[in-house]
Image 1 (cartoon, rainbow, N blue to C red):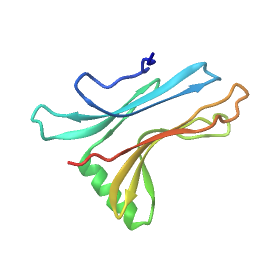
Image 2: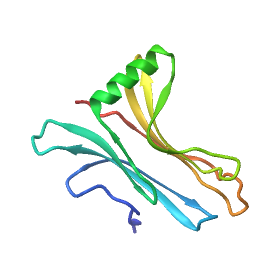
Image 3: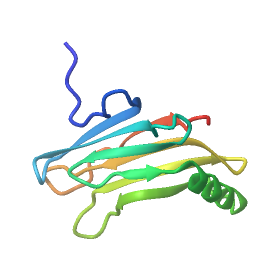
Length: 135
């Protein structure tokens, strides 16, 4: 029997990826779903990442194109986009959306999560990748 996702894309949207992780300190599940959202005109689209317990991210094609070109020119393998939770001395959780770059163009999107064990130590990271959608 399939388990129900903790957060889902809207009806009719193309789901691109899903990931969830458990934070033992808060006794809470974090979940993210990425989906392609198309406007009513049928031609304008974006990738939206919806989060459970945190904000999500919106990846607009033109903004991602420009940032990917810049990251590629700097030799960076990826750049971080949208909501992120960076680890600190008191909280090792790490949440971010990474846009991977090849030859100055977006190639994949990665949703990366690292939660905490009950001891406060970092749990094993989880991530899921999906191809950057073609226009």
